[in-house]
Image 1 (tube, helix red, strand yellow):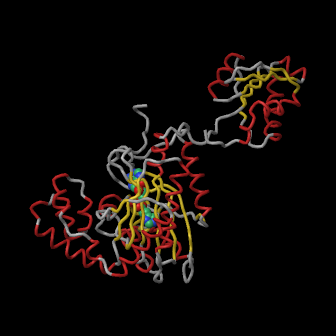
Image 2 (spheres, helix red, strand yellow; image 1 turned 180 degrees about the vertical axis):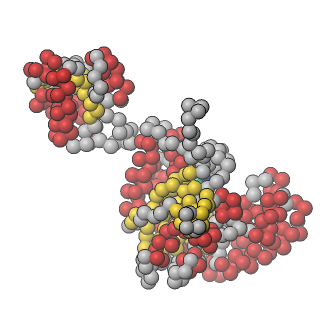
Image 3 (cartoon, rainbow, N blue to C red; image 1 turned 120 degrees about the horizontal axis):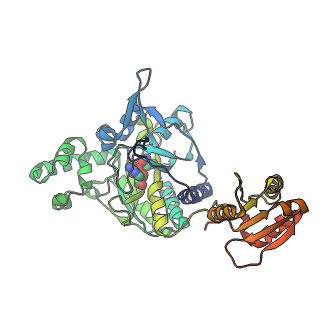
Length: 432
Ligand code: HAM
């Protein structure tokens, strides 16, 4: 396909062999969120550029160099959403959903960041995001962390670790920022180019640097924990107490600062060492200032987003195949009369056995060719109709995966036979 049009770098097709895992994750996460009283909302993929500048922060990597921004035909500056929180906050303000109310929402869909693509890092990627509004205390922080913990447990992923930190209130963060800038200025010679640039714009992000040459100067930097006010400390201590009570294990990571500017108090990340450099699978935190910053009334909020590509990769490493949607029955029909009977038999089977997955041979072919397709389809059973069977009101039922005698049965007992052969599998949608 060298002359054909290719997909954009970092924007991937998700092919049929992979969708069973995606569906398993989406269904499991949806079930978990429903169990905690969270409702789904659906949001636009494109928003005004200004929204992301004002929320994520002008000086962040995302806004500075990763957004897909363009002018539409009216000359308005629009951006493909690089994350979901900003749009969600815009929507809840615009629709009057949080005025004096508590709300629990989730959303799913593609996000876009012009990062350098590599394993686990793409330019179009997918998140399931969770946002809780109107609750100021650590109880709801613990709730959203418990949701993320339960999601990984329900998915059978045990290769992730929870890291938490607190950034404190906006004012103690500002005080810490000054101390940090002073410290890094005193050690300017040890900073790389990126960090020098961040020194004025976003000094907390220097702590996040992966540059080995800077680890010593980072390790010796003042810690935010020493600049927390009483309120911030009490909030964080209570959260830790709640997590302990819920038996949720975590690691304190005083260097965890996150790449978006809107966070206050708790920030957290589920990290893994199985995906190379891309170690965060799920991340979030509290953002008490964002709603008012975007024009709403002061509303505390907390949330997280699960990165689906990385979750799918971990599920694959765990050997989980996802939800099988392969046909269970393949209908072989050779000859004109057989085709006529066959198509209506397939409809009848779908009527009689809800959720049964039946694939019909279309496009003709010899018995041999059709049986080959049956085998390739993944079906457990072939229902075979030749002219002889079609004329005598019968069908042959042939097992494709197990050792069992082929049977000839009347057309009105095909469904029954299939159900007894498939046993419990016709309840369908079982994770493989
Ligand atoms: P974030 O840390 O930027 O947070 O992204 C959340 C998750 O999305 C990451 O942990 C990662 O799994 C995944 N992710 C991010 N970038 C990429 C990429 N280029 N390729 C593949 N996966 C990626 C947010 O987006 C916040 N809105 C989370 C949040 C919600 N905070 C509060 N509420």
